[in-house]
Amino acid sequence: MRACLLVLALFFSLTAYAAVPPQLLLDVARFRNEDMAVKGAVIELYATVPGQSLTYKRRAPKVFQAAASVTLEIIREDGSAAYQETITLKPPVLSDTSISLKNPVSFQKRILLPDGKYTLRGQVRDQYRKGQNNVVEQPLVVESAGKALALSDVVLLARAAAKSSEPSNFARGGYSLTRAPGGLYGRGADKVFFYAELYNSKPEQTAQARYRLRSEGATKDVLVTNVAIRGQAGQSTPVVGELDMSKLPAGDYTLTIEMRDTKNKILSSKNARLHRNVAEYAPAGVVAPQ
Image (cartoon, rainbow, N blue to C red; front, side, top):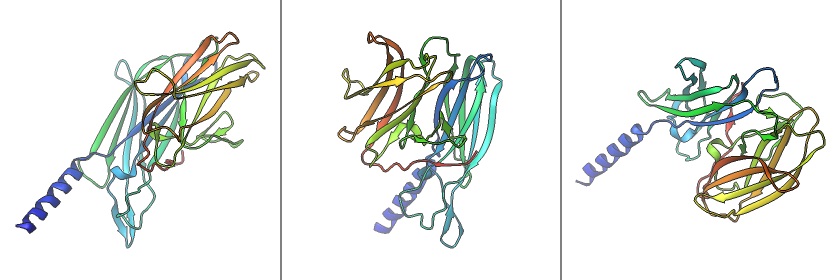
């Protein structure tokens, strides 16, 4: 009888595992198109597949490999495709699949899009588990930046932005950026790092930036920092910062960046949502070259 129960438990465990589709996280940031004659924006599309959601297949003695096929699309309002691409992502090879930690793998693409309303669609398929796929969709609105002081979208980072003069698909404003997929900050990640860009700031103009972190559903900020940002002549100004959340409990938070004038009036504001999970280890994404 006990043997039958064990077999049934194993069966249902495997059935439940097989029913869980692979995961796909889509992070999108909109930046100003430096060609001011073209209406639109630069879209940074960052797709991440967590390694825990994939099947690892034995390829050789003590060598296990997973692979995911990811199709990314940006659909116009009329249903036509503004962008479409299919890529294969492979997490690092493992020698032992019994370990619980399996690194994610990410892909980034920069796309120029004209103003308009779009739908971002991503589909991920586990190459070693037939019939397992997952589709994620989200709206995407592109609007050209005007002539007033304005902020780009906020990019959440897994580690502090590092200055870099080398051109890279993962660098902006002279900084190398390592994103925090899905805005997740796991065990050991006691600081939230971020990057944004300030547009239309007058040369040598100093604006006051306020960084605020607020728990989901709360009415008061749990962290607030004020920083002076000096505009750069003839180009966008990087806004790079961090907040220490080591004393904050796990949960969902909203990071807000505000740009204020000398009279404390808000000139521009952007939000980004993040999740702090002190029980789960969240390694920085392993990036696929592009």
